[in-house]
Length: 182
Image (cartoon, rainbow, N blue to C red; front, side, top):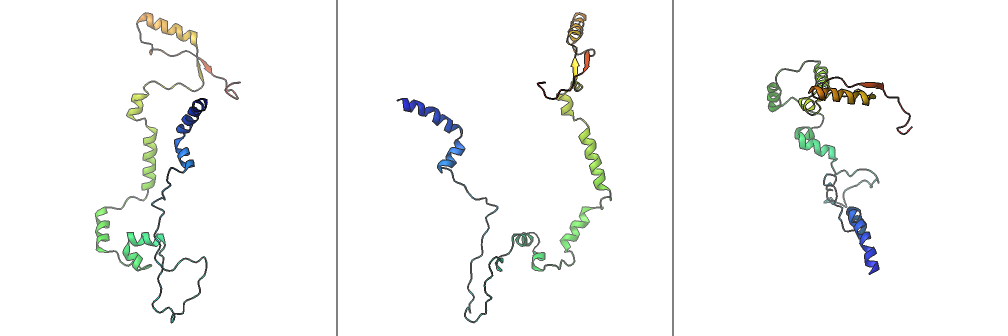
């Protein structure tokens, strides 16, 4: 009975770290990444194996019948370039139509204009920021004079003014400390 009572907290702690426990016990499966799995071309035997003068195998060299992944990508994206490497030739009719439909060429300083627009947009406060953070931001390292602030709030309350009217009395800048507890 005492062992089962002591076993309950151990099982609860183990349940909190369920992922690592299942990996440790071998209950989870680790499937391979589908983007890194590639197919290998099957081995083929030449029809006239005895007559062919095959070069001796060299360890470490890539298999000649395997196409590298970069070449497979080029073939998928632009088959004409994969079939005739180095000879791009004249653009096709479809490529000419695409270029003509694109319109006028952009100005030479387009990157500088885009960077300037992005800087201007990031510096401006958005509507959402103004809505969420409507009060003014306090100056960093400024201490509020608590007694004077309390007197100001009482005075504003007696006059029927909202607490947001008037300036907050401050003592000045806080002293910089080496660490927060010194």
